[in-house]
Image: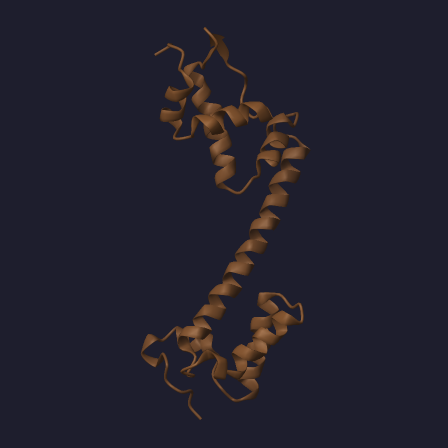
Length: 170
């Protein structure tokens, strides 16, 4: 299995489009292959570096960050650790945003109002977003509104599907 691969064969083995492989080469993410008769010829080991780029893209690194990652020396050095830390912080923020979005959607499902626009908690949260608050802050403000009205938070009702769309006790 020491035969050189064409770009189409490398693309087929890795599931990455040939155009992406060429682009990644242009960016320096992949080594330039030998050419035979003007056509790229990759060693079978080229699959590994393609897999590294795919894996780093899969966890959220940009192509620019991947370039920094691949060119940082020494390979286990401080720059890579900085990139890891930065990406973890970014992912933590995205997870927090996704959780806030999930909580807001759970409120919508469990809200006792037929029309969400009649819900004071929803309109309070929407107003908070317009004030420049984050979704998490707006959702917390909506919960404060719900508690002021003496209602059980929608998130608690959402945990019990049998209580969905039922007016809160009171």
